[in-house]
Amino acid sequence: MEFQHPIVAAPMAGGPSSTALARAVASTGAMGFLAGGGKTAAQLTEDYRSVADAGRVGVNLFVPDVANTAVDPVASRQRRAEKLTEFREKLLPFGDRLGVEIPTVEQAGANVTDDWDAKLHAAIQWPIVSFTFGLPAPAVFEQLHGSNTQIGVTVTSVAEARNAVEHGADFLVVQGPEAGGHRSVHDPQAEPEDIPLLDLLDAVGDVVEIPFVAAGGIITPAQVREVQEHGAAAASVGTALLLSDEAGTNPVHRQMLQEDRSGVTQLTRVYSGRVSRSLVNEIMELDAPAVYPEVNALTVPIKRAAAQVMDPRSTHLFAGTGYLQARTGPAADIVRWLAGERA
Ligand SMILES: Cc1cc2nc3c(=O)[nH]c(=O)nc-3n(C[C@H](O)[C@H](O)[C@H](O)COP(=O)(O)O)c2cc1C
Image (cartoon, rainbow, N blue to C red; front, top):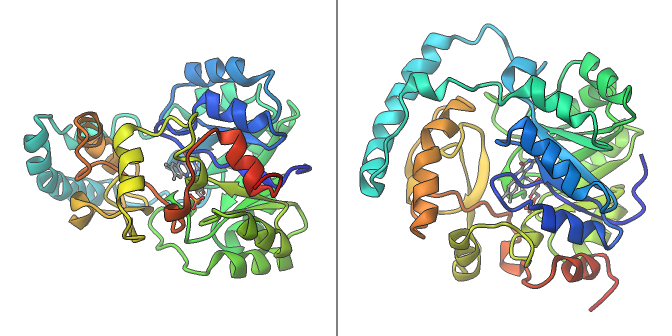
């Protein structure tokens, strides 16, 4: 796996990673990414058709617990239900305020696989696939390699990096705690490590020989050069592209990224049960159990309705630590600027 360009557009589920963004990024020679999380397999195939002629574009898949070798299969379903019932109660006032129904705990557990098998089948046609949230079995890697797909795995620790290499990864996405959106910790119950990105890159570089890309808080050309000096083949940038013209970032998210000048971001499990970094708002005051993806299913109606009415109090406003420096304008200009090709 070779990275000829220093920039990768990080996959961003929930809208930002539009096909227009992937095409614009790939037009510069950088690698574009689409996000498969929350989409159907049919949508992935449609996405592929929209970007197949665009240059280098990959697709990212969330690894559900059922396919994640890092998950302990004896985790008790009963305890999950209790925790979810308690959390659901706390969501009711938010639902009432927005006039939406919160799913029952049973309904929230209806699609815990995120259509994994069908999506994996659809992923076979893509030249590049990356996995987030976990590590599938080596057989999955063999299957994708059989169709000449290059496979990346997002890791947040040296141990995860080692395991990903053993399973057959072609490249790693080393994600530091500065990252906007979800941390890709492989064990969903574990608390994420707090090793700053540059130190994590050094530590991973000491133990792996495959190429790795750096992600988390990278928002200036100087930071791109810095991660390269720490061994990264490229910088994977998310927040840096959220305000670009082509990103499908929703209007309230765009507005808050520009209006909230506090520079403060916080970690929360409230949006999905997994840890994510976001601008701070009211719903993040709630404690949420580490039960993914059911917590996501419970909060979806609130997040959607709040975004629709431009209410920033209860929708996810994912942002990396560098969000104050995110630029507006065409994505290709932002990518060229980050790569040091234009002022
Ligand atoms: C809005 C948003 C959505 C994200 N969705 C995904 C996703 O679907 N898959 C994934 O692997 N990472 C996702 N991430 C994390 C990014 O891929 C990347 O690790 C992160 O954006 C890097 O940090 P930065 O935002 O400071 O550049 C998301 C990040 C953001 C900001």
